[in-house]
Image (cartoon, rainbow, N blue to C red):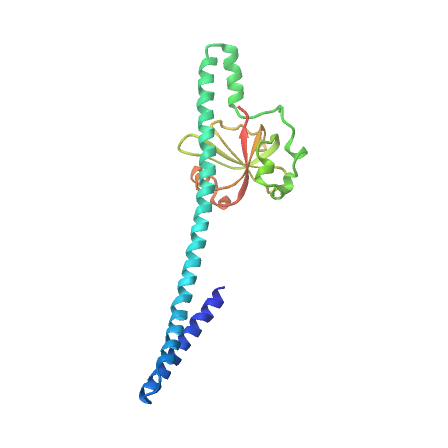
Length: 229
């Protein structure tokens, strides 16, 4: 499309010059000058119109890219808001349980964020974790699963005290994003097992980068994972 518009621009310039020369020649010979004027106008329209069309197409592409970026940012902000609400509820529950020693010990156990026993099926029994790109966001959303022995490839903490974790299954490049108020406690091999549910597909954006996630992951797709309460 760009080369086509560039060709139209050159054709317009040539038509304008030819029309101008033709007009000067006709004026000196006292001939009809209407046709040369029409040729000049035609060339002028092509010469000015082609860049205008290209500028319009460029602006349309930029607006579409900006709209997509805002949509992705909105999805992550919504996820962050849900996690913040969940953290306030957990805080109230922990305060009530502190009146009882047994309940307090259970609260400390859950706050570690590391789940050695799981209630949900292993994700590898439902999905091919080595090729998560084949699934759509709708196919993943709402599926209750457990992540068994996933590696923590990167992590960070934002100004609101929320932890951002990038996880990856063994022998796979797939990325899973977990945003939680709990600090996860991996084993000595930086592996962890978690219970929760999938929440579709997003991409690593500026929120994760500001929390401390490496910029090398910015823009990459990640499966969103919500921890069980």
